[in-house]
Amino acid sequence: MPNQVDQSWELSDANASAPNPMSVTYREYDTDASFSQAVLASEIALAITYNGLNQAVMMVSPSNIEDFIRGFSVSNDIVEDINEIYDIRLSHFDQACQADVQISNRAFWALKNHRRQLAGTSGCGLCGVEALEQALPLLNILESAPLPPAEHFRGLRERIEEAQIMGKSSGALHAALYFDTNGSAVLCREDIGRHNALDKLIGAMLQAQIDTHCGFVVVTSRCSLELIHKAVRAKFGTLVSLSAPTALTVRWALKHRLNLIHVPHRNAPRIYSPI
Image (cartoon, rainbow, N blue to C red):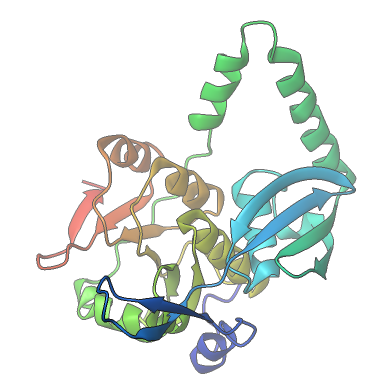
């Protein structure tokens, strides 16, 4: 399986379908201030159905929606891989989008069975057990991956800023990026939600048949436990965050053999897993 794609095409294509940021009027907190225009990030409500079954409604940035659907489906354990996604049909409305997703019979049966379990435990005092299983799921242990060379982190924040096209124009957007084995930024996905940005990146990497175990992924947001879940399910080798992880996040990265690196703003990168 290839582990690299053409960088120039992917970085430009990543935002080719992105909507223009919205321009809104504001004035500064001064009675004599004149009105000005500000460019702000866009967001819409996205409703997802699987084989006609309503699954989720969430607020997302209206770009790379199909990447998000693929990544969300894999990282939330709805499908085992994107080959179980047969079709994605999007219906666009003024401030919303409906995604009708067709998945395999195996995945749909598992999804319906899981929903029945949720319904069955909601009134019997066991709903807390189900909630804990979702928060602390049983995940497969990854194969260990080599750590990226130290030089791949030099000027990392500046390279992220160059790749984050929408964020530069409007702000208020998280980003998730894939860097290949040469340390080059190949893919960038942005969203108002940090989970959504990572799901979009996962979907784009799987669609491009990139070996997720090679290279490294960077998230510009706080590295929460949910992002570790998604990284392990997507079989990442290395996850890099620009914000410090929590102690529990480090424990889970160590347990599942996920390389976890924090790149502080002014200090050298810190390796939390492996140690």
